[in-house]
Amino acid sequence: MTEQARKLLIVEDDPALLKQLKWCFEGYDVSTAENRVDAITALRRHEPAVVLQDNGLLSRDESTDGGIATLADVLRIAPHTKVIVLIDNVDQGIAVDAVAQGAHNFYKKPIDPDILRLIVNRAFAIHELEGENRRLQNQVNKSPLDGIVAASEGMLAVCRMIEKVAPTDVTTLLLGESGTGKELLARALHRCSPRAEANFVAINCAAIPENLLESELFGHEKGAFTGAHKQTMGKVEVASGGTLFLDEIGDMPMPLQAKMLRFLQERVIERVGGRKEIPVDVRVVCATNQNPEDLIKAGLFREDLFYRVSEITINIPPYRDREEGRLILARTLLTKYTKLQKRAINGFSDDAVQAIESYSWPGNVRELENKIKGAVIMADGKMVTALDLGLQDVDQERESLNLRSVRQIAETKAIRVALTKSYGNISKAAELLGVTRPTLYDLLNKYGLSADSYSKKAAS
Image (cartoon, rainbow, N blue to C red; front, side, top):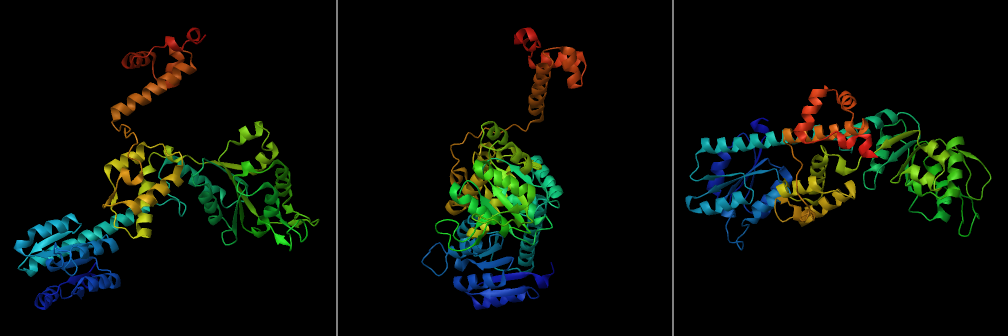
């Protein structure tokens, strides 16, 4: 960034000092203000990277014009702005307060132009560096699909599947717990497909009464039932040319499942009360938070319909299993809601990070999003705490990152699985583990394990 492009706001009510400061930064893009109101106006209008503020507007007496509230307002509106406070020697306590409130630095009068320019230039450099870091971080966190944060192996695999499936018209089934982002992924399938410019129509099969769901899906003719005053298109027709998303298809009533099967096979529909077959060209994406095989066994879902809707099945991992991406997604949502609520929040405190990593998240991403949204509103300081998230009582025992401990856990688990599969046979277990018999014996001694407890005799 050149000096000509560097935007500097000088907040100073002494005309002589203001003139000196403007001369000091001749060649910069300088705007000025003499009070709190003008400073906020100039901040919004010019969006300076650095603000040079006189200590006269940082009095501890809040009854004076501006007070410390000027600094708070600047950082609330533009949290990445670097504020440098000019102080007199006797006002060092005020400077300490200002830095505690988020000021970048302070400088004691009288002014030495060379030193002050050095401090201001350093603030510009840090502002530019932080901006570049945020840009690179966003690139790292950006998913292969717009709108999806995928940093864990499980979610990256989901994104790769969506990229492969999207250009086709195969009927896709999204399986995942409630709150894992099934509709978001369905929309991603639509956006990445040749149908992206056409309609994306979503319908929740569990949210509509059984007697209305057929009409909602396939439409109805005038007079088909009481209240049917005109011919109405259903969701399937509205989605023609685009994508139809059937959420919670596991809750679709059995009588309607037969009609859905015919639609998927023939790509024609009949409105309720109608006799005319209407051809439709639509890509179908389905989702459920239930296990389809359990539904089929319980007689609640047709097996032939299951095979028709699951030409491709994508399993979405719950949030608690996205270990590598858990904190990245939380920070992404924090940035989103900090901007929406216009709050100057810098991140999560250590106890909040530990709580996010330790909590089981039964509500998945939806629960995370709700907690962060509320925390951004309720937070009193610059950091969101575990208390703000409502997770202050979470057992915050952190997973060990010590390589020796991690290796011991992994090796012990692998040995137990191998011994279980081989019924305690050392030779077979060693073969499964890819080690020699002596090595396996050493590992058994090292971890205090015994092959005898896994033998067929022990099992019987």
